[in-house]
Image (cartoon, rainbow, N blue to C red; front, side, top):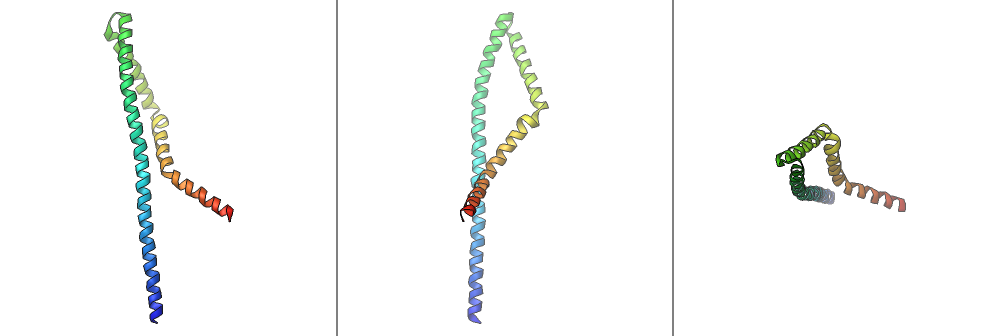
Length: 129
């Protein structure tokens, strides 16, 4: 009777250790995926910021040039700002198609990439057996 009890207790301890290890592994995978998504977003934000600063100076130059051609610099700024107003309205109207969907797809791809690789590896192992 005692050997059965000790055997059951041993199985229980092993199951408990397995569960704790599995939970820890899921936590580490979640942290890894979150860090991957955040690092990608930070990269895009940094590149976007640099591009915006570049675009700002180019637009100031264009505004001054157009204003010089028309004889009043404020007219150049009004023309360039009207152009960006049209772009802003376009982005507002087509927001889901141009911004929301690509960002959502990127996040889903980053989160599911490792799972997809695991599925492919397990299928390859099954084919080899």
